Amino acid sequence: MTRARGLGRIGMLCAAAAVLGPLGGCASTHLEKQLQVATETGRLVPLDSVTVSYNVGGLQVIQRPNYANDVVAVHLYLLGGRRQLTEATQGIEALLVRTSKYGTAKYPGDATRKAWARTGSSLDIDPSDDWTEVGFLGVTGDFDSTWSVFAERLMHPTLAAASVALVREQMRSSVHQRLISPDGYLFHLSDSVSFQGRPYGLAPDGTEESLGALDSAALATYERTQMVTSRMLLVVVGNVSRQAVEHAVGTTLATLPKGDYVWSVPQATPPATVPVVMRARTVATNYVFGLFEGPPASAKDYPAFRVATALLSTRVNDMVRQQHSLSYAVSAPFIDRGISAGGVYFSTSAPSQVLPLVKEQMRWVEHLESGPFDMPYFTEGFVLDYLASNSTDDEQADFLARAQLYQGDYRKASDEMEELRHVSTSDVRSAAQHYFPHIQFVYVGDTTRVKRTDFARF
Image (cartoon, rainbow, N blue to C red):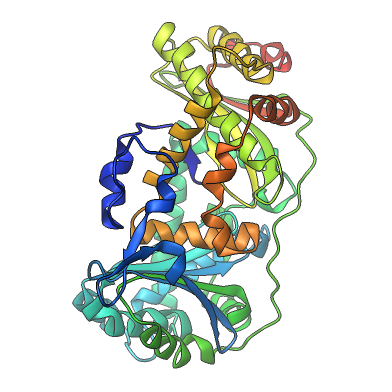
């Protein structure tokens, strides 16, 4: 599951946005229009005025310079995500990238890890629903040396059998440990059930079975055929010049084959037809997750769906946790991916008591009325929380990439906040009525504590 978002405290924005420039008072509206970055001369300018997109040898680059500090965030997106996989190749891209730290042509064996350690940069590898993000966060003075090791790992990993075996077993152990956890098993089961036979049902980190069958030969073939520039989007935010980025990319990644990959947003899938899948486990509490598929980010009702999910989250938390003390963990996460999704999650010792309360709040949102409920106040709080979650250089890189890939234009990242402000009560009501009813539940725990018919009533 990825990028679940709900409402937080409005005050978060004041501290988080300080990395970009002055905002004025946090009480003012449309704060995203006041966010600024520093040019090379120290002048503060609006974010979008300096953000550019260009092509280097077939590889698309989006760059937002910010000279207010010495931080550089680099995110490379290997596109496809779960759609790159089959049952047999689950986890292959993650295994490939992680194994590369144990040796490349230029930095054999331990030299790769030693060279990276000297840069002081942090590396992030995140296989997810629609892409694998491989990136680093470092300082300006180390950009060239960091990029050298970074690009070498992607282009020329040696993939020694012993190294592959080591990382493979580490990944299998991680998968095993995750599935031992009731929460980990719950979310894994939810994807595999809700999207059975479809790409979102596959595991980017692999399964114990799929990882066990992957070897150096399989990784080498994948490297040769799938590490192509048409599958890549590079986003750079921070204190580095366009000239430096173009040179770094042009002498390394841009020399890879172009390939014929074409990115597209995943297609919507039919709603679930089975109300609940139950798995008995002897645990101290019971775990429930209901998933309902939403619209793509480009859809007209996407902003309303996001607000509807956030509103549901506040309602179920207040009703189940605050008023009835039936759960310490309850929310309605928003899942940000090519085809968005929402859900209801809770752990409890009394599932049969919680389910009617959850249903009641879902119906409340589905029949939301104007009047006492102040939609503009709620959406402004949502906007501020969202900005607070996307204000550092590292987070902005992801923000820009999602706008480019999900909406076709990185500049639309700035429009998202305004679209949220225009969501009306009727928009939320309509989105909830359209998407909430198609909910697929998974239950892990004591199956004698709840009836299947309790889920069917949704």
